[in-house]
Length: 221
Length: 194
Image (cartoon, rainbow over all chains, first blue to last red; front, side, top):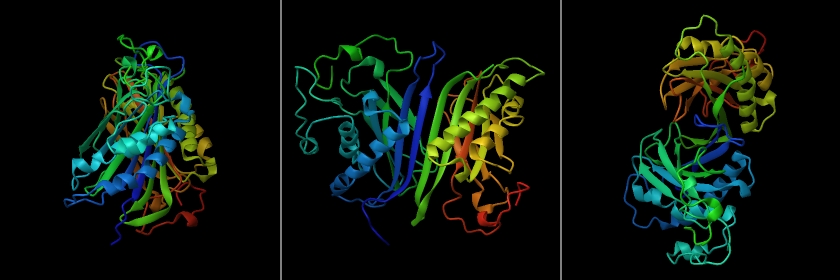
């Protein structure tokens, strides 16, 4: 039996254009997408104390998935306005295995979209140099990538939260996309998910911070 | 009247490893889904011509979306299928009007040739109802390695007065086919069966 840390069994992409939701038809439809990679869970069926090596091993997976999603959405990186990520762990795994996606998933998308921070510092729990900047826009994809995860059966749906890439409080961009892969995860699999969209909810109208009013450039406002 | 499309969804599913065996090249299945308004919702209409015309429009649109997602030339397509989910204010016959009279011709144009019947499924359903879109080889229905299905589902559709229309196209059969029968390389592709 071979034991490789990274074994990608399936890749599933989903792209949707939302023209309206029973209101005025959008001049340009909102495009949202998700990419799901179904991986073998190398820790299935047992407790492994040190699972961090997989977090490093997942980094190229995240980078490839982020670019694959952008290509499937068929838009330049400049059009991406919100993002999110998630994981669905099969029944022989534990929630903590899904948590491995926090660094490699989020930072793959942020780097694709122009983030200039220090991934190693973040991975070590030391935060990001871009946090706290108050003058001008220091880069792109400044906001935390919202996430969710669960343990589930094949075909389990996950509502992946999405927020604005530069300021988490932009109210028009609070959203979620339901993602599922029919037939996955099997008990010994994990589905890792990235999601991106080109804009606000199609009929956003509940006020709050607007994307045009982002001023603090601290990832929040 | 043209289809009033609320959402358009394209999915691509690629299998690289199945039961520990590397699938090279990976099997790939594309799915294109339109969520449309049902012009006959809530009433009985003897004539369903508007849905027949919508079926013709969607056969071309969704077929082309699948081919684009696969990134292949039309002639490289292997199998296809179609399905519809009618919302609660419609009837099964509305799905039939979309799927059967005119959807096939433009879909066959999108995948080149298509001598075989396009396998189909239909049902009545609510938000998030899933339908298994049957798949069969596009030129010879008896090719056993290509009998398959792909699940289509839209989380927020169909509303009562909507219809979910799905078309699936592949460039491959199942991942590890090994139950014999007619092989893809043996077909004549003339009668649509063998």
